[in-house]
Structures are given as structure tokens and as C-alpha cells.
Image (cartoon, rainbow, N blue to C red; front, side, top):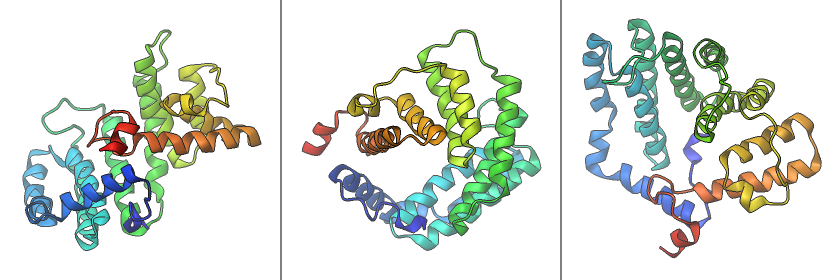
Length: 253
């Protein structure tokens, strides 16, 4: 399943992005730097120090997806297995922090490790597992215990809350909880369904349209949500290489 990432892209900017990914991970020095052996060498040190496993698993999973995209499927799958080992060991030894950073709360650190185990299993099998449900249960605890809704939040804070709390439930299939959290964070949102281009530039409005359709199954909202999501992804393709420059300039390049 995941081995097909990027292979069907026909949009010029999307194609450019995935071509760059393939070129990056196909370079001989990068095959060595991001190899399973290289990650395995760091494992014992991280395990002994009880630090580096959580962030390491996250980074190795990114390498795994990139390598599979580049056609280095065997290497990518081996790295997914190592990432799973990192995350499982992180839970065993209590590594709940980013490397060199302050510890997360126990629940949030456990959440990250659990998500990483699930994602590794998904890459390896193409199936969701019990770790996804467990991770969402942990995220609920984090939200209720450490990050309860504030009376006043900036738009930036609401954006972050949408990404951290709403999106995982949406991806995990718990649409009711995702919708409830969205309304708790943002309240009522007024949106013009016909302004596809405007809505597609706004992450929060894009998520709102998805959730609104899932909640009501309205045909007009479905059409607007579908077009908005398509344009949203069209707009952001290539981030990490091109920054946030207007897409027409990307196409020219």
C-alpha cells in the first residue's frame, strides 16, 4: 500500500516534490546515513541513556516512508521495524522526551510512543491496530488534564489545538470526538461554501468542512468539502522544499 506513495502524482509540483524525495534517499551517502544499520548502532546508546528513542522513532518513520517512496522498499520496511523497536523500548525505559529537550507529560510522551508503534505497524502490515485506539485514549487524558479549553485563545493557539487534538481523532475514525473538540476550540464558524479558493488556504476551514460533512452528510457540503480538500493539498504540495511561496511561482520554477 504505502509503496505507491508519490507514484500516481501527475501534478507538476507534486511530481517535483516526490522526485526530489527519490533523489535524496537514493544517494549512496544517504542510503548509508539513514540505513537500518546506522539506526541500530544508536539504539543501545539511546536505550542506556533512556533518551533519544522517542524522537528517534519519529524520525526513522519519516525516513522509512521516504525510502519506500524512493523505491528502497526493503530498507524502508527494515527501518519501520527498527522504529517500532525504538518506540516499544521507549515505553519500557520511560523515554518520554524529545532528544535533549524537556520531558513531555507522562501521558503525552506515552501517546507519541504509542502512535509511533501504530504507524510502524501500519507501514509493515497496512492495517490499523489496537495502538491507534490506545493513543486516542491517551490524547483525551492529555487534553482534559493539561490543556483544558481557555477562555481566550489566539488564532495561532486554536490552529495548534486543531492540529494536535482534532486531526488525530479525524484520522483515527472517531469523527464524533473530533467534531466535539473542534466546536470546543473554535465555537461557531461562518463559512461560504462557494468560496473554495479562500477556504482551501485556511487549514481550520478545511478541517471544518470535512467534519461538517461527516456530521450532516449534506450533498452541498460534500461537494464543497471535496473541492476544498483537493485544492488545500494542491496548495501545500512541496512544502519543506519550496516554503510557502505562491503555487503559480512554484509551477514556473
